Length: 116
Length: 113
Image 1 (cartoon, helix red, strand yellow):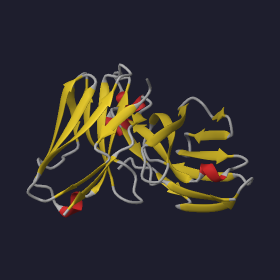
Image 2: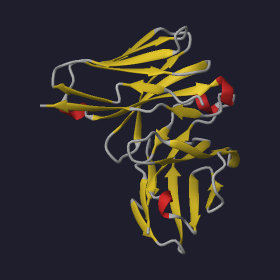
Image 3: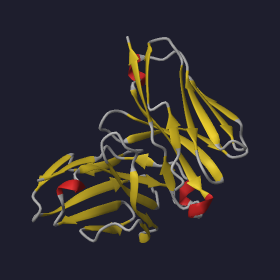
């Protein structure tokens, strides 16, 4: 199984809502990533988990809260978002090495988030 | 910032033609990777070239790397309508301790039948 799955595919939420994005992989990868991508822009790294520990937080606002319950699952909890947070949120995984930047990353299809 | 610059930003060609896109980056790297993204979808890894390699092929793809110029190119030969997508280069930068991939600005390729 070489697939990264993400749910939901689409999410519309108000600024006072709390919601969660979910990502799952069964490739035995030990590094997992959240990216944010605005239209016609490259993906921007938000968080990296390496061996279930948060290793990189790219100064993301606290209204985004990542969680890695086990080596196969990655969640992104959302609370009190702003309209400018509307974007495609991509999850990825990789083998997980000393230098994860050198790994090939496998991406999920993304969650299209709209904040009203 | 390590972010790569890609050119052209957009490229429109006919089926059967070749497409070339270029990537420039700023700091020393271990590897450079190319990814493809169909509209609104996830990215798909195409090819990885190591800093000690100069050229690599995979099917209709040819990637070159010139570390002295800090640049790479992706050539797609005999393009097909299905090649229509955005293409991103991505580098692991020494400035990040090789801990993350940083994506270039991307080239949007349109292949018309």
